[in-house]
Image (tube, rainbow, N blue to C red):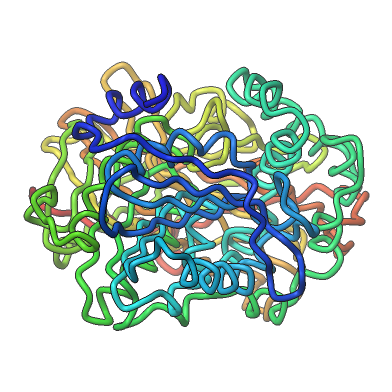
Length: 544
């Protein structure tokens, strides 16, 4: 037992280890095109056959060795592999493209090993989860999966609401390239906020196609392919979309995410697909962001229980109900048979003049207005973002004071309101340009007037949108999923803006291509709230 594995096991509350492990490094697993991928095998030092756990990683193997050791100490063979073009693996790293074929070749190799007994699990968060979905229909009969903060497709992750997810990919690019060249240095940059600050600086300069050089010092092939070939190219994304592989024959799966993870809606979509197919997957959602340490600890603990249940027939570690979610506002956990837990009692709230949010019907009124200037883009503040510092629930005061932001606030609540699932907003709006963005955010305002973000949504409109009467758009937002209790005497607040930079690439106001745009044109925006064109919030309310 290494010091790292002991400390990790203690922090995760894992059961006592069963054995020591044997680590075999430097294994070169051949792919079908001749490229070899660097692989490490961790074996439990126990007699008899044991299940195997596969983790395919694009971040180098060093940071996952302790996790692999912890699993191996508790009776699992672990195959830890660096994805193509990462770590010491051969080939070029082209995100998402090779995970199906390389994953299948790795399965073929595993099946030929003398220690493989026919039982196989897959595990890992984020990109590692996508690598699992890429081969989920090719796993052996006795198998199980543990997918965390991930998605079976990535078009909606790269282009949420129709805009490029700029902050995510500039930060991720720095992380991947940094781990390749100097893991210790990049780890320091992650948690100091340096990556996030460089992302902001690089995102303010145009054109975006050169942002790769601004954050890494060199052109990155996949970044430029995405800028040139992936924008608006459905065929590109369909080829790496694995949602069609989910169904009745998908191995038992355990999902873990956080309410402030940027892929929470995609994960819940994949969960719903398995439920609709007659499966009973487990789901845990906590008050976490994508990189929360507590999320990773919980993932390791639940993965071990899940693999023991489905590969070793030991279900003693599983909870009775498959769904466990955290409800913010009251800081409590609840367990259910399914998510969402039944049909909600939908409450409808209306925007009114003078910044009022109320369930009362609206009256005739003039629209509210603001100007969005992409030269001084409305900033993102907290939320479901990929960031090592500043993600999740934060005080929105600085954002709400801006002149390009509107806020609508309710009276103090007489009784608590608990929402679970996706809040929906119907927004009637008009802009002076055919290219305009719209960002809405629901906040909880406490007795001290601190406004904390709960969930939000984004839509990009372009000149390609169909013409509408009076050029007034009716925009239907699905805010990212949440579970939250607005307590008595708290107030609801809706923020309306036209950007959240650099989370979403700012709308330049022109038809210039994403990677080449350099012209910035301001837009004047109107938000309507009259009987003919109401702006409405639909709250999914539950009694818990």
